[in-house]
Length: 496
Image (tube, rainbow, N blue to C red; front, side, top):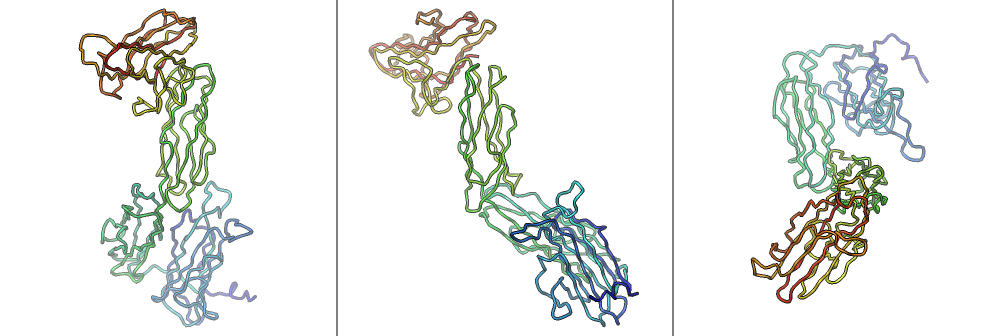
C-alpha cells in the first residue's frame, strides 16, 4: 500500500465525523476548486455502518458519493480501470466509496454525499437510533466560494406511504437555497399525475411543498421525479426522486365489541377480534387500548391476525364503561383503525339476551329471539303473538342492603288491535319473591302502547330500593285475549 499521498503537501479538504445524518434523504455538499493540474483529483467517503446480519445482507445505512466536475457527474466506485467514469449505478453495499480522476483535470467541483438510507444506529451512544456520521477526504482541492449561483436543496429524496382508499399522506417540503452568489431563480415540475408541487417557479431561498394524491390508486409501489431547474446555475437540473407505497387497508371483524358482566360474578367471556389485510401485501400492525380494564393479546403481528380481547371487572362499580382498541399499521402509523369496546357491569346478568337466554327462566310464549328486531346486539326477549296465551321471563338476584338500584329496559310493542281504549293484551313488569308471588307491579303496558315493529323506547327507571337486602325476581309477564295479535319485544334490561 502506497501511503505517500496521505503525507505529501498537496492541498486537501477534510470532513471528520462533524456532520451527522439523522434521516434518509439528507445531503451534504462541499464546494471547491482543483488545486494543481499535475496531480490527480481524488475523493473518498468512508463510514462505520451499524451492525448488520451475519447470514444475509449485512449493510444497514447507505451513503452515496457524487462528484461533479465541469458538468460531468461521477458516482462512487464506478470505475474503468484506475479512474472513475461518468454515469453508472450508485454503490448500495460498500461503506467506502471513491472517485478518482487523473492529473490534468481542472476547474471547480461539487462533492455531494447523499443519505440514501438511514435505517440503523451508526453512531451509538446518543438517543438517536437512526443516524450516521462519516469521514470525507478531497485530495488536491481548495475550498472556494462559488462565483455563480449554486442551488442546494434538502431532502434529496421524498418517501410517502398511504393506505388504499384512505386519506392522502402529509405534504413534504423541499428547502431550496443559494449557496453561491447573485440571484438564483428556479422552475419545478413533476412527471406523474399523483405528484403535485405547490408552485412552479420561485427564487431561492424558498420552499416547495410536494403532495402525493392517493385518490383511487390501488395498492402498489409508485415512482416519480420532481425536477428543479435553476435557470442561472451550473448544477442544473436537480432531480428529486419521489416514492409512494400504497398499502392495502385493514379491516376488523367485528367492528365493535360489547361486554356484559354481572356485578360480583367475575369477568365476562373473552372475545376475538380479527384483523384482515385487504390485499396481497403483508402488513404489520401494533395494537393498544386506552382503558385499564380492557386487555388484548397479542399487541403486534402481521395481518391476517386474531386478537384475544378480555375485560377485567375487578374493582369496577356498576355502570357502563367505554374504551377503544387502536390498530396502527406499522408502515402508515397515521392511518389507525379504531374498534370501540363497551363494558356494562350490571346487577342483572345477560340483559341483552345475547348467546343464550340464561340465566333468565322462560315459560309460556316467552322466548329468546334473534330475528330482525333487536334493539342492540343480536338477541332479545320475545313475548310472541298468540291469542289466549300467557308467558313469563324472570331472573333472580340479590340486592345488597346499601344500594338503591333502578330497573330499566327497552320495549317495542306491535299489535293488530285497533281499539284506542281497551287494554286487551298486557305486559306486566313485576317484582316477585323467590316463590313467584308478586310483591309489586312496577309498570303495565298493553296494545295501546303499540308502535311500528322494531321501534324501541326506553322504559324506567323503576326503583328497587324497597327490596335492598333481599333476594327477589325481576319478572316480565304477558296475557292476551282471544282475538287480534300483540307482540312484546324487550331488550337491554338493566338493574343499576
